[in-house]
Image (cartoon, rainbow, N blue to C red; front, side, top):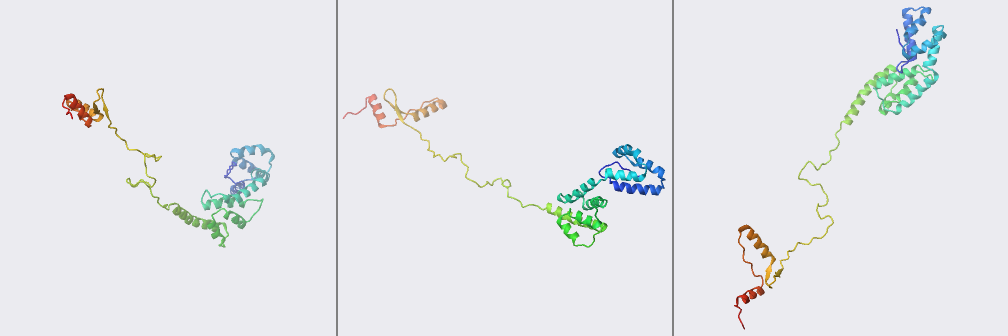
Amino acid sequence: MPKFSGQADEHPKTFLKDLNSYMTYKRIIPAEKLIIIENCMHGNAAKWFKMIKDTIPTEETFKTLFLKHYFSEDKQWDIFIKCTEAGKKPISNNFQEHFHYWMVELKYLDTPKMDETQAINLIIKHFPMAIQAYIQTTQEWKFLNIWEKLGELENGYSKQTTNNQQEIPRSRPTYRSNPSYKKPGPPQSSNYNNIPTTPRQTNNVAETDGNGRIYDKTNITKNIKQIMLTGEEEEPEDVTTESNMTKNYEQGTVESD
């Protein structure tokens, strides 16, 4: 027994065709046909049938109301428009399934009515240009012939697309492969502003103590370090002739003219 619930994947005319075949096979008498029809309805379709049950005296009345509700002219035009716009998007399922789905949709249209050749010509526009060009050059404008041909063409088209996607792109040079390699660029320096640097100078200026004795800061620092290391003080060195004369004068050894 066929079933109908009003879902999108259930075609109203396909259901009526299956229903007629079932009643013929079972030899259902006219008085029992409406009972069989009610048992075929499920979901929203069952609710709809209960609403009109008292207004349908015969099977033919049911078919008229059924098509008016589930396959009206407005819905048929919507199907036709969707088919013409389907070629603007990539095909989500395989070629054969796509072709079969739309052939069934267009086959049952009463508005606009089209034959098999017209339906095929409209659906072929959904496919890639290479597929369209090949189909257009053939004389096999029958559903079964084109359906089988699409299966063969899809295998070759899918393999070519996969191979193109698996091509290895050109390798780009990387600077991390060689640790000793330095990326080209301006020389790195801490002096980014190019400020001229002046070498540090040490001022070893000799100074005098309170008695006028000349001493050298460098020697004093040297003596302090010596005392800290050995505990012995190193005799300071005289740095100028003037210091020698001062020492001789204090010892009374200065020669007179």
